[in-house]
Image 1 (tube, each protein chain N blue to C red):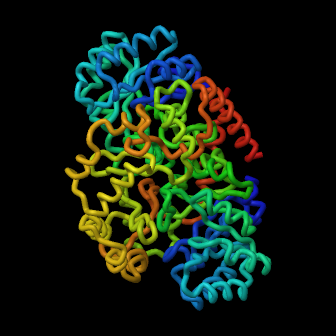
Image 2 (cartoon, rainbow over the protein chains, first blue to last red):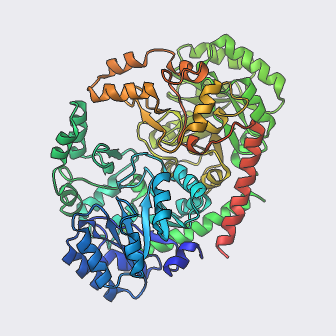
Length: 315
Length: 315
């Protein structure tokens, strides 16, 4: 499979493993890259020193391309940027912020820059900033999300109308069928989060992985839209948020309820009731904890099978 | 294009025009059927006598198959069922209710029955009820919607895992790219609402059609989830609902605010501020008022083009 995305990153398959807090350290990223996709270290839950260690270990574990995801709202963003440059990381995915702020600085240092967007406005900003590609992330994605609630199916053709940049589809993609659908919608590659969050190499707590497997349809919801919209499993903590809404809570009250370290509690420490459990809608179809290698190869095979089936429709 | 859906209905293309209140009378339904798709009269906004007239006119306007959509919550449901049987309608799409209630009664009268679902639970009920096909409708669809908020991209492969019934994809589909994507996801046909709501033959008010054309990304939202979730344009009426939520309104208060005839006001009478304007997320990509014939043929052409492009990806 040859697309603008496999060309841009020099990888075999147009499958990117989403950079996820508490799930995607060097172990997952290197496993995905070794399988022919592009692994990303999720720096959002790491101190700069921890990030440095993960990058170093990732370089030892694979000689294939890999990248780092950096949320631009990260409080020590400058230190993170310093680390990735020092360690010679060649691919950076930025998210949750303005692409105009750091893109040219990164590109001046020979780094390929991809930015995550959920609407037309930020797609235009990405073009202006000179990014190399965008991730178009729909409403069904796990974790932080756009305010417009546009789904991947609607977002892709819309952004395709507005940009010539290569597009990586994200949100709702975890199998070969959805991968094939993304290409129909105009994507040049796909980003997969949830299925890798539940993989063997994910650094998430085993209890969280089991919770992903238990999740059925309707198990997740986008909430805390007044702070930053986030898709989570509807556990006891989520019910507390809902109760607060019913009581007419304001932003301050919601921030207080959220507190600090909720995601770490849930996803890394396995406190399934009190923690924040970020995952996408496709959790409903995840029924096994698999290796990253198996996820990549089964997606590619199913995608190619789907193309064949589709082709026969027109005969 | 030959699929289980073209076979089931005896139509040329696997494109169904969704039955929509205030938009899809005999004029739109017959135009879609004449174009080779399947037109549906939306009975939800009609008195039984009005429905009868629409069916009779539709029979005069086309000799191709067409159907009627019947929301099962309709207060005079028995009269509607009487009308469709008397008039010899051969295809019924039911929605918003339990498929176990009327399916066998309809099938005993030689009618093909399709039911609209948004989750696994009701898909199972459809199998039990003996329906001929299901419409899988995702979160991005306009108008009434499921409580799970599952998007079309996530819903289709999920339902495909749970049923062997033919599946018609709905929600977020209004172009050949999304049509092709739906087939990749396991659909046998697609249902298109919003794009037909803004068509020449739609009976919607001209002002509402223009509002659809003006809508950009983020222009719609799913609201009134405590009553029946409905996707509408964020107009002044929507803002009143939001304000009520902020003030901690209960269901009674919300029902009072909604009142009666809100959708008629907005969609049929063109009261764009005070009316309820039901439309899907794809409104963001609708930029012209086109004929039903053009919509059907351009979707088919774009879909076939997409299949070709996709096929070349694997070479």
